[in-house]
Amino acid sequence: MELAGRVNTALKTICATNCPTVALFRNPTAPNAMLFAESGKAKLVYAPQFFAAAYEGQGDGAILAVIAHELGHALDDSLGAVWVKSTWPPEVRADSWAGCALARMDLSASDLQSAITALAKYPPSVQAKWTERLAGVRAGYAQCGGDASKLERPTAYSK
Image 1: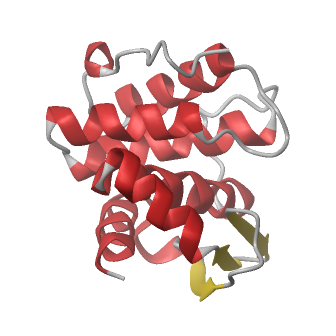
Image 2: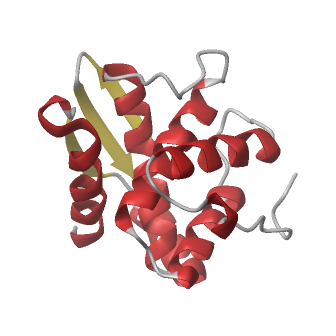
C-alpha cells in the first residue's frame, strides 16, 4: 500500500531505528481501522470498505491521517515523547503522533485539510472530544516542524 509507505517514511524521521514493526492486514469484518500494539510490534487491521469510503470522501489525505493515527498508538506504546502529555487519553496521544507524521509528510493544503476532516469525521470508537483531539494534532504538528495555523477546524464534523 503506497500511502502506508508515505506514513512509514515520515515516521522514520521521528523514531529512526526505534520505530515499531507494523504489519498491515485487510479484514472486511473489521469496523474500520484499529491497531494492536505490544512490545514494539503492531498489527494494523483495516476494513477495505472503510478505506474506500474515506478515500472517496477525502482522498489520499484521509487515508494518510487514519494510518498515521493508528501508527500513533504504536509510537505512543513504544516511544513516548516529552511533548505528548501523559494526562491526554490514548486517542489524543495517537492524534498528536498523527499530527507529527502529517507535518513530516509536508502535505499539500488540500491533502492536509482532507486529513483533518477525516480525523474529525471518523472518530475512534472510544469517544474523545474533537476539541481535545484537534489540540493533540496541533501539538504534534507544531512539534514536528509544521505551521499549526494551517490546521483548520472542520465544522461539519466537530463535536
